[in-house]
Image 1 (cartoon, helix red, strand yellow):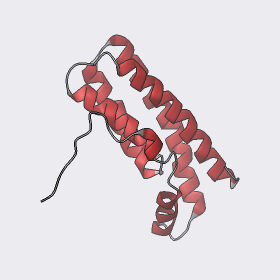
Image 2: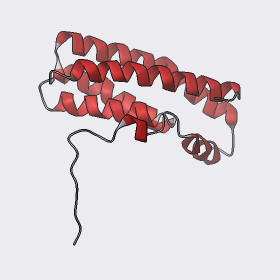
Image 3: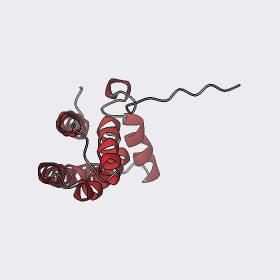
Image 4: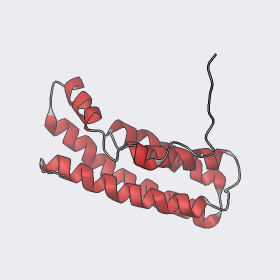
Length: 134
């Protein structure tokens, strides 16, 4: 017998890594270890991701659940592509809230969490690009 436990919330962010470097390693391997390509992809993500965060802020400020879906979906997917797994999980949560058609009262806290995850992910990716230690 399989017992399945349901969570009220998605997997807790501390359980999800800020940056999963194995994703970046796999991405690099898929392009014949062309690090410059991976760096360009990360730089594009950092530029576009900032725009998605701004769009999420605008949708939340307007209380527009429908307008939240697209930038949250885009950020979820692009974050996962570059290994920013915690950010991807938070963006997914916001996407699902938008798809529900109404924004729960605690959505502001989730948007704040998104900002924290964006900042941490951006820093981790910039460190990876520079070849530095975290």
